[in-house]
Length: 111
Image (cartoon, rainbow, N blue to C red; front, side):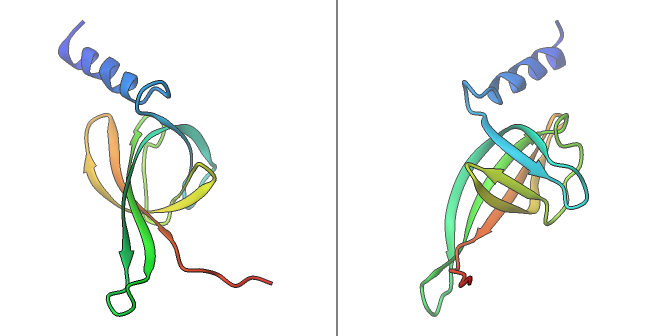
């Protein structure tokens, strides 16, 4: 087994639900939802400087390219029944994407 083969095995192990992986549903802006594993890292809440009220939560998500071959802004990601939106790619490796995701924390008034 070569170095690249071993790297692929190691990456797959990291995404395992028994290790760092978390079950997610990735929905492209123009496509069908995909159930897969991702590595979710919560970030910090982004607030309004004037009111000091949290407006958005930020996080990073790593997904395998074999599960998500392409990403775009406004793709949706459901993690633990909470929907996040893809903002941008922070990094790319031959096997995965590291994406910045955010969700709105502002209260909504629904009737």
